[in-house]
Image (tube, helix red, strand yellow):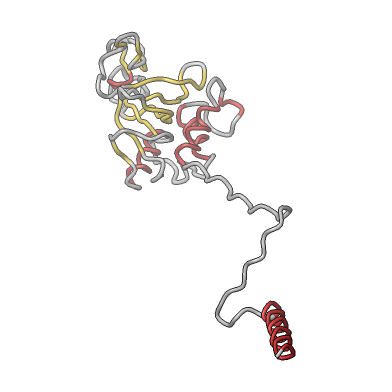
Length: 220
C-alpha cells in the first residue's frame, strides 16, 4: 500500500513539471514581450504648414518700413502685393496688363476671373482694393477708377481691418472700417486712415470712403 502511494505521488510531480514546460494551448495568445526602456520614441509628425493667406500676410508685414526700390518689382502698391504673393509662388501679374491699364486694375481683373472678389469679412492675406486715391491721369477729375491695393493683416472685433500697403515714404500699416466709412476715430480708436489728400478736386478722403472690395487669397 505504501509502495502504491509513493508511485502515485511521483507520477503527480512529473505531470506537474511537464505541464509547466508545455507550450501554450493553440488559439490562446502568448503574453506580449515588454518594451525595453531604451526603445526609440515614435517620430513626431511635422507641424502643419500655415494657410496660404497667413503666409502672404506674414511676408507683407515683414516688409513694413522697407523701401521696395531694391526688389525686382515697382516701388509702389502693386509691387508690395506682388512681393507678398510671390512668397507662396503666385505672380499676380503673370497674365500681364492691357494697353492703358494700370497694375492694380490688372490684378483686380485676375481676381475677378478667378472668382476671388468679395465684400465679406476678409482673411489674412486677402487683397484690399481702393479707387480714386490720386489723380492718376492728372486731368483734375475723379475718373481714375482702381488705383490702390494692399494686403490684409488682421480684422478687429469692431470690423476694423488693418492692412499693409506701399504708401508715402514706404511700406506701412493702415486701417479701414467698412461699417463706418466716414468716421476717422471713435472712442480713441482709429477706424479709418486718410488715403487721399485734399486737392482742387475735393477734400481729403478716408480709406472707408475709397474702399472697393477684397480678393480671397485662397482663390488667387
